[in-house]
Image 1: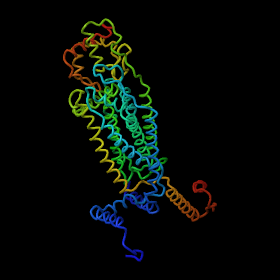
Image 2: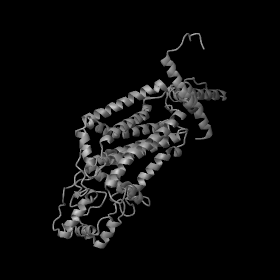
Image 3: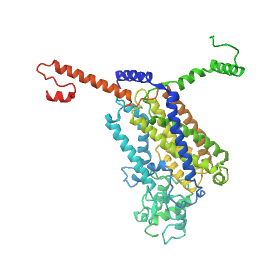
Image 4: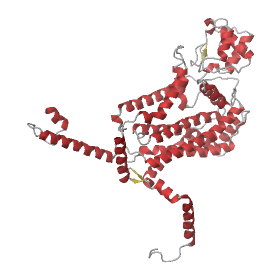
Length: 245
Length: 277
């Protein structure tokens, strides 16, 4: 906005205020009605759709895919979109770049769009942005709401496990690996790759353990697991598709 | 003072007035109330402009239901948290309702805040001079989202636990600062009792305090700068129509002044006349 535009706006707004009405009671009564209706809607929702008590926490098993609240579904879906990318477009896009760019854009938006025009039909870019962003959020939320929710309980449909691999599978289940990876059709289809045939990639145990300790984002580091657990897990994952099918 | 002042006042009224005057002398409360409550707003102020107030009321409702829940909730990972949620839901009088209102209130608050933001965006209300109102508002949106994230863990059931583990891992995967943020959120390298206490205090004290502060700032800006006028208020449309009429009149004058031009009827649009020429 040029100084002249600012001056014109100030003058125009002063005029609007001069010919306006007092906040109390003219705005307050509208506010009270809408806020009152909203509170009534919340009470009706609370009565008709009762909140349940879920299963108690058991850090030793994860028998389903973790689901956030619906208003985080869009972020959750974003992870999956960037899941199957190659090394040149890292998953960090979904967890770091995209959300942070959006947040920064959101906060500094008034300093980017400084034109004096306020009517939306004369701001095609802003109108397009409104439609695209709202559409994307709705679409991603809808996708998140319809993503598969269940993971098999206890164990994976893999046979031929020896003692160490069985322990490895327990470590796999206990640490929620199935929330991001799939093995023999069980587990989440993303963000992590399908591990059904991971044995055939030729990763040896040392490489696997190094990966568990310092993986590429968004996979969290499992460096805090006991060394024996990492060893067992490496045996299990390293043999998937070759020794254990 | 005036002729109407015909006798001694009712002692109660006299006392009340003296008290108000005493407080006003020291706080300026009368001026403050007048400044806040009886300021003028543009006549075209619309129903869409009630969403901000609604978000604030829902936040207030969350605070009240949250305080009630906090009276019964025990942030203990060894069964206490889960049992207290069971107790609130099944035993406490109206407990299920308070918990339901708090849970649904969170979802409704997100929706209301988003709609409020969409309204401000579509109306261009974030433009001069209200840029900082937008900045404080966008911080409030982020705080509201963070409120949802931290509150979700407190019920301490499987779904909440694992979703929060993943969410914290996502924070921790950010470059450079990520691992530190992860440790701060988890209160250490692993999820455990300290994590729940930390989330509890962040959810109950840190973020509500921040939200209250930013609501204060947001309100101060709104009252100081005035609520924006709808870009298509009756007054604005009238001004635009007058400007358009003036433009046409000027164009007509110009057309008349040109030698050899035809005198078109005044009702003809300027464009047609210019095209014909």
